[in-house]
Image (cartoon, rainbow, N blue to C red; front, side):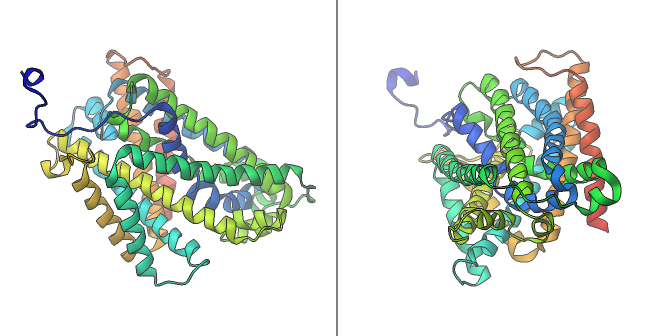
Length: 410
């Protein structure tokens, strides 16, 4: 009837399916790069020494286990609030499902708080301003872009990701062309051997791969999600791994390990040793990378709240879609407000540690959910991983969650 009479203006606005495979890959890659490699390369090198590339390879292998589980589940259940949907399907427990959803939202909020702090730190090296003003400026900026539209948000993320990756590729090229320095060991390598150093470095490097889980929460805005989502998750992880390993090799090849381990801005340090270009250019790119990460997390958090509202797990206010932008504006503004609050009130160390623990706990739950679904023999969505993958993913995520919790209570 609506077709005969014209558009049905009484229908509720819906999310738009406008995300292509390449944009989705950039979305995932954008949240993995930036805060990950820009901040962690020094710490990983300090732990693993010249074996830092091996540490990143091992971390990628561990991350790929849970990424594989997410890839299969996104094909089976292409719905927003993915983690909550997966846990619900696996455990048939709505309370546990809601807990998973809230935990992933909380991880996005505290992770964005970390990035807000990082933005103020990097930007403060370029221009002086009050910390609170920096927080409010960034909140308005990323909130406006996130509410503007999903296509616009992902285009902005893609552009910034290209800039981030371009800077990293420049460092890689310069590092491979430079004369190598003499070998210098690292504390863990010297005290416990190469294996101990690589294991210690891999635990740190794992957090540079966190981000693939954000991708599943925009699935209702992805074209052909059952096919595109799994492939995009795995491709983003592969690209991040290639970049990380190459950057790690260039870093330990050209910069003393002791300097890398002590630096608060390791990428700026490496860049300044390889070129005469002023170091503030790398600081500027790092600032932009942090903004990108915050935008990704806010988009993710708003979609999780939208998905929970669609399942009637939380108030329908969070599921309302703006007619003009076709984005969950209410949920977006709510997430931005909580991110701003966390950045203003919580210590940086608390934010980072809480992010890791929350995500790893959800990862363990999601892997176990897939095990239960596969053991029941339920029909798949077109993409499948061997059942050993979620078993190994659950074990590794649980082990890392225990390590993270130990750091919090220490």
